[in-house]
Image 1 (cartoon, rainbow, N blue to C red):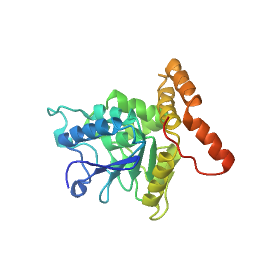
Image 2 (image 1 turned 45 degrees about the vertical axis):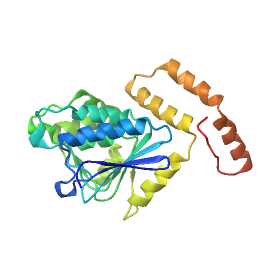
Image 3 (image 1 turned 90 degrees about the vertical axis):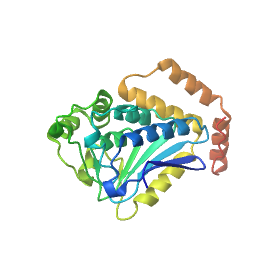
Length: 248
């Protein structure tokens, strides 16, 4: 086990972090691998969902502190921004601790599922590290200014229930239900109408950041309105059967 692994099953791709003996700490080469995997996923129109998982007790302990400031071809912000901008809908499955830059990777995802062992903290201020723009903006737009200040400026560690309250977790799963719930969510997302699913994911993120392209939104609305998928969705609704979407 070493660099993150990409696997694809039907419309769902999975990237798995694979350094459990180091709490899935990310090394410079891991950033390059993650970016390459995102490029691969974005280039495949059949992939509608991207699931981010990890092996072992921890989800991810963030970037290797000893490598901060070293030469590298890909920086952490680049990967986090690329994850937020990924074409498929993204789901982070957080089975354990999420620390440092890994908290931003999780926030970059559209859904974050956690279990009772999930906790997080952002120790940048303890290290004398000023976080990058994209991450600061993600914290504020997704968690609110007060929560962002608390997490960045105090380096407080929050447990699963608190993470659910502040919106870091989309959903908190009881007992051993995390994996099955993640599979269920991915299957649900993969079964939706592709144009509407991916279009709304994209435009919702732009709305949150105040960067909406109104013309592009209207074009996507019109495209979906004229699609075969809309006609299929209407027929399936009236016939009380599951829809069979084609992405056209």
